[in-house]
Every structure is written in structure tokens, then in C-alpha cells.
Length: 90
Image (cartoon, rainbow, N blue to C red):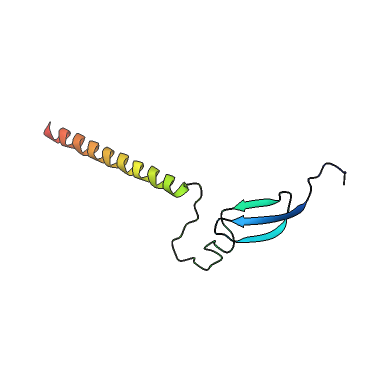
């Protein structure tokens, strides 16, 4: 290996959002994470429970898009029913 081009590999403290901490080795002295094996539902055996690990708001974003889609679909249905009623009157 070439000397001087690799980062230094030091002892690292990993800190989870749940409060769990442990020591490992990394190129950074401290790592902050949001989910670890102590708080992730998969490792706790909570597969049937509806607990989602969503840090980026993806679920809320999906639900907003779904609501908008349903509103548009209702508007299209109402418009087509109105047009059908106009055709019958003629």
C-alpha cells in the first residue's frame, strides 16, 4: 500500500438515536446513526406490528400523493357523470 494516501483508522464511538452506544473502528471518531439493531423492529421480532422506520418522510409523501390522486379520480368521475347526463338530455 502507498503511504500517506489512506485515511487514519481510529477507534470510533457509534451513537444511536435510541441512546445505544458501542465502540468500533472507523475513519471518523464519532458516528451518529438513527437506527441500530437494538431499536430496529426486524431485530426485535416485531414483524407483524405496523411500525415503520421512516426517516425521510417517504410514507407521508406517498400518502399525500395518494390523496391527491384519489381527489383527481373523484373529479374525473363527477365530470364524466355530468357529461353523461347532458348527453341523455339531448
